[in-house]
Length: 299
Length: 204
Image: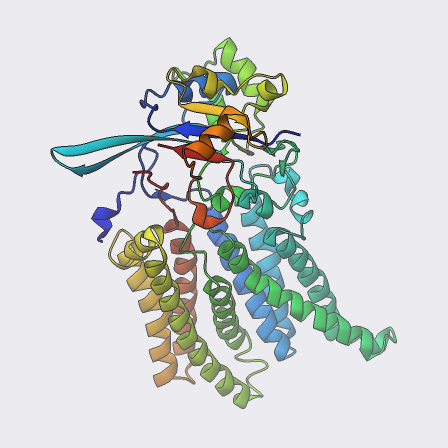
């Protein structure tokens, strides 16, 4: 089957493949900011790097929230999204974001002002706060993929690899930005940490590539709609963006830069730019290439 | 309590789209919004070519994926099996729309309600009155004309169909026309592999 054979019918009253048109670029922006912010927070958290954690919290708290609000049809009712944690990943995600932002901010304040000593809290409270904040950040990194993977309507999304890709992309972006933010600070006095992060970014990029290939491959072999989505990315309308930005700029370029010139700030800057461009393009394309399965024919 | 469902007789459907117009009138649907569609498909090789018409609407699934993902509880199932959207609770996140495998949800765009079916910015009295039922930004869909059903009437698309290709009834009543047709003519739900257990069946 080629993309020409797939009969994309749009709004016509015909049996065929239809594009999902409900989750658009504003949703892609929100997912991107959520994953990136939580990723920076989580990696910075591992190094007790307050600047990185604050940056992560701000990216999630301001940008993700803003793009979600712009997407909502009835923004004033958005608080209602928290009401169904028993069945909806959006509700669970919103609860996780609330925990992550609240406890993450408290953890940053404790670290920055040494509140444990100042207020005589003891280490137990601080440990509990940081543990919950880190767990919430992990949920924020993955719940968006889980929300997508639960949609049986769209084959490209309906895979357990979606939350995995959310997690690995979040960690990749988070690691490279933590490395940049701490270049002259925490990593200036801890060069082994810098080397360790570079090698981890390379490993994460490799995992990103494997997960990405698996997402496309599994969609291609799952159903007619999934095949259309895969062909749109590989040979159809989104081919150029997918190959040049998601694969080229997002995976190959940073891999080469970090492999050949790992200790160079300019190289890391360029690698970070490539990773962010690739991650964002992936988020947008996954929404754009999502299609509904054709209605069953009864012939 | 009844468990309402619908049967489409594909042998009777002639693709006239009267049901679509009846639905639009009954529900005052703005331009470009449809709660039911009659899809067509051609198959075969010339000269043995055929066209089949496949009416579609919300399948009011027993295991509705749209209801499962709704974060605000706006999507709910009535005791009689009709899946409803409470516009006062809907936040317009569209998660139900991307979860529905049948693509049977519509977003009430603010722009849709600002112009009438005649393409002017002026709404007719019918449109002014009818559009009051919509909350801008929310998601809406077919509710089997629940107000008519509550009054003991059939949905508008059913009464409009000139060939009686749409049969509405209680699926729990073995003597209802819908149940009888499903049983005797081996009614099939759409995309059963998804296990959503639709309450809409096709017979041919």
